[in-house]
Image (cartoon, rainbow, N blue to C red; front, top):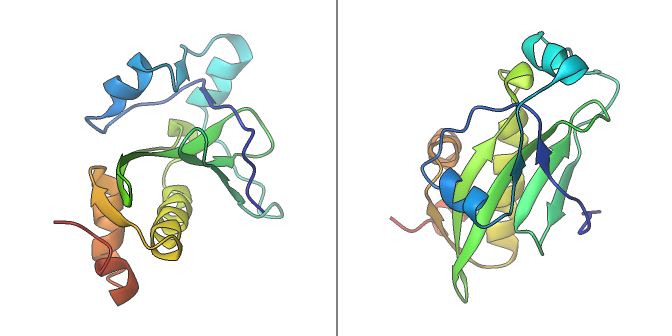
Length: 148
């Protein structure tokens, strides 16, 4: 169900988590400014195709969950890092600006928290959005895996 051979390229995005700079410096993300048609699409209010279900892909090698948006090169992503043998840090969630406000990050957060539970991991919640998601969805099976 999850693909492990995906590469992430942001074409337009605003990064909000403190850990973002670490990810770019490690080369895990390629970040470029939008140009031409991509810039116009990034600035417009993009409509998601309601007939296409959102599918979360998990790339364990790159330690990320992602959603391809409308079959394009735009992706929403949630990045994590192992900080111990059984401990992950959910560090950053990013949805391109044109797709925000459509609960896309919620799908990424759910997939990440389900992964933490299924793998019986402990999780640091560095990303503010993941903190918000867990607060709004205080399921006992999530809460027992969150480190404070």
